[in-house]
Image (cartoon, rainbow, N blue to C red; front, side):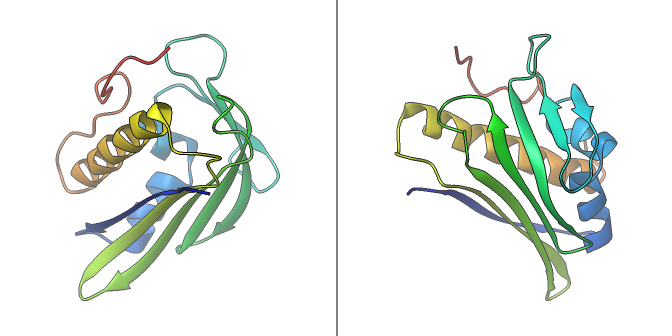
Length: 147
């Protein structure tokens, strides 16, 4: 099964990056401002992108501060169902390293290519935001219309 995988270095602490990934307010700052739910293991988070209903619902599978967060898609696009999203953090040579993976895709296709580019855009916006710039949460970070 193909995966989307990125490695990004941050000039900030693992705790700062973790808090931007493991809180509703943090996620709203760099991915989509429309997040609903409870950020706790076993609970779900809904992410809206222009519609009143969530485009994706993720179950929070793991929270291990400040090094790992894992979600499993329980509702959303067919290609996302049962995929996992993980954020692994480490500290290496003076930088916080994020290894992001959206794993378990059934096949590579145009939608996967769109999502890969979108994830890269949003994650680089997270980096900008944590390093004093402006993140590009949806809709500013939209890389193409899909639908």
